[in-house]
Length: 124
Image (tube, rainbow, N blue to C red):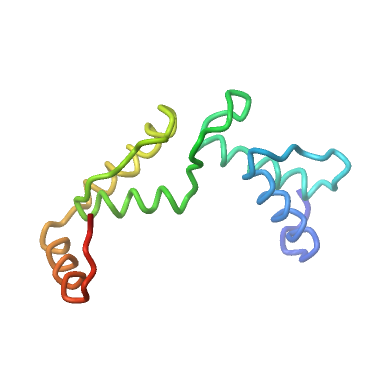
């Protein structure tokens, strides 16, 4: 791996990484080393959250943002809706949600609910 502090290398790596997260794109072997390494890492991260692309692309895509939302839901003691996710994705989501449940603090949750209510925000 070359120097990741090189701005050109880093830009190519990040482009490859973001393209690797897109399950509909395939790697182009005509790209440079940085792009290919980034693509492979992005694809590994995608498959870690959503399952192998070879097994099909799920209806809903799990990202780090989605997982953070489930973690927060667990921390606030909120119910979650897992409709549309595959069994593989639900397994990943469940781990994040459970991690949030372990950090659940009823006092903080009540305080947040009261602040949201004062501002006219309802949580379903």
